[in-house]
Image 1 (cartoon, helix red, strand yellow):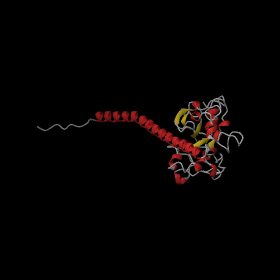
Image 2 (cartoon, helix red, strand yellow):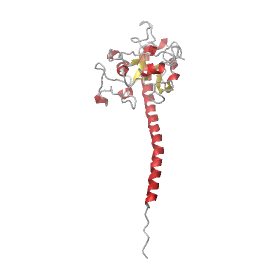
Image 3 (cartoon, helix red, strand yellow):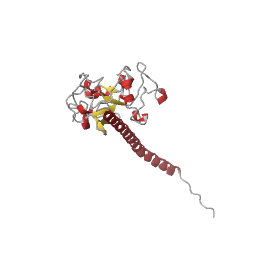
Image 4 (cartoon, one colour):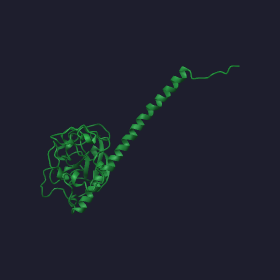
Length: 243
């Protein structure tokens, strides 16, 4: 008696392929979401490290905060920038770059496209809140800005670092200008020209955009934009009103 040889029929093979394709379709979005979540968490760790570096700097300099020095458009003084001032406090320069930041303004040797504005390249994925600056504070007297931790009413409610825009003139800066964000429907649009407020999800240029923010007390958190800014009176950048 000749043994019967069994094999997949064409229909069975097509069913198996269809099931595999269905499983891949179900798993890929979940894997993508897991990767985004991991990158957002790594970004939070970077920002927390930078906030702690700022705190250590202040502790070593009688409460004075590191300043900013790189104006948008590629101008400014790099020696004044917190990126350089805090360098002795962060052990690894990798903390300056957020995972997934593929801005074209990173130098070519750092994996970017080498684009520049007036010869200036991107130096960090993060920007400092200019309310805390001596040099680029929003119209305050240079003698009495919020450049010292002792002048901040609620450090735990005051943002020190946020995510810098990946495109435009501010991509090569080291700070933002919060006082220009306006009120009403304007803030998300204006802020998105300076900061990457949708770095970790949500609709772009909207109050629902989500990104990471670091505070003067050393903590960092993922927030919707409207959790940190809605208008001049309700925001976590101006120490006078931050709550």
